[in-house]
Image (cartoon, rainbow, N blue to C red; front, side, top):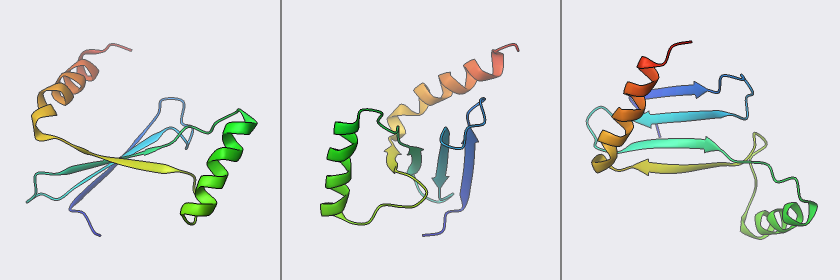
Amino acid sequence: MKHDVEDLLMCQCTDPEHMMIIRYFLDDNEVFVSIHLYRERNIFKRIWTALKFVFRGKKSIYGDFDEIILRPEDADKLQRVVDHLRTVKE
């Protein structure tokens, strides 16, 4: 699926596991946000997660990602975050 707009946002620490991908079509109302998932340190939780992937299907070699579709009614909340980022002084 090709998107009209695709932006990659990286964490200030520049760790490639700390990123967010935002995708959307210019003629559509849906915005997709993909986020790299946290890697669990507890061995038992990791084994449980591995078993779920074995029975659910193949895991990506690039790590685990999940995606949400932002709701249009949340645009004001997202705008507040953008406004805050623009006013932060380094």
